[in-house]
Image 1 (tube, rainbow, N blue to C red):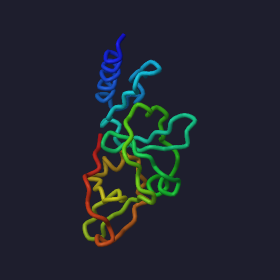
Image 2: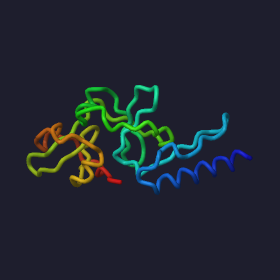
Image 3: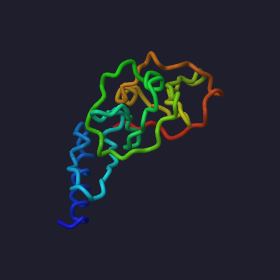
Image 4: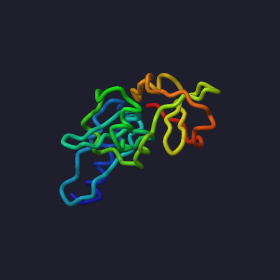
Length: 157
């Protein structure tokens, strides 16, 4: 089988993954050794956390791509425990890491809740907040003037 045929098969397998909200992110069969690895964008995986077996790195999927959670302090700014991590995210494309020290904030002036890092990204409703399994007890009440500029909203699945 030619390389382009293998890549097409991997892409088609990845596309079928995107349509299944809780399907294994590694459902796309890896190409044979020597072929380039096809990474996928998985919007149906938004909010899921992945930690590949044998690796220390934890990733959060936002905008369909994995973002490395850079350290334990940042992790516990968002979640209360290590529960909920999945082992099967290796096929999802990797984006920029979360900023060390990222946290959850509620604007005192508006009551809007954000994921704060390089920008503040609005979490539009409780359903999306819960899809990310964020911990309500970790949300800090802050003034609008202390937050960075607004980025895109946090997408749900």
